[in-house]
Length: 120
Image (tube, rainbow, N blue to C red; front, side, top):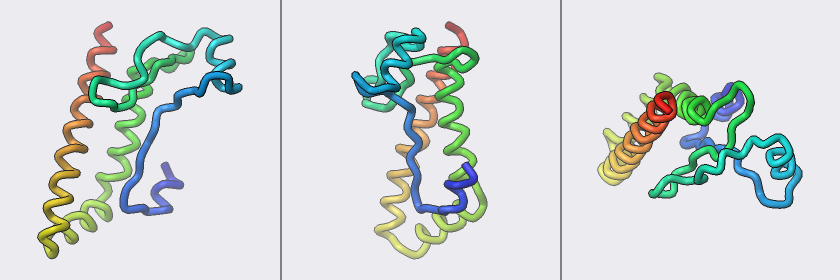
């Protein structure tokens, strides 16, 4: 998180680890029975964890991704930079509005996933 904040990029992407068959990581997950058998993506193609570690559930993995995004994007400096850009450029405002809607929609889906996992 600190490294991402130091880079201060315009956008970031946080990905959930998925192994590639035949790799050392894949062998490790299989050997330790960490695969859950669940899909790697939802019906819209958004990443979901298909593994769990002892003491780290699928719910916690998704919540950690959400926490990372929250801590990165909801800093005053980033909010100000985004708002400032949108105020003075109509094209940029439209793009930012579309991206914000998509981001918040995905954020809500992640929260729903985590809530459903907590009930399971």
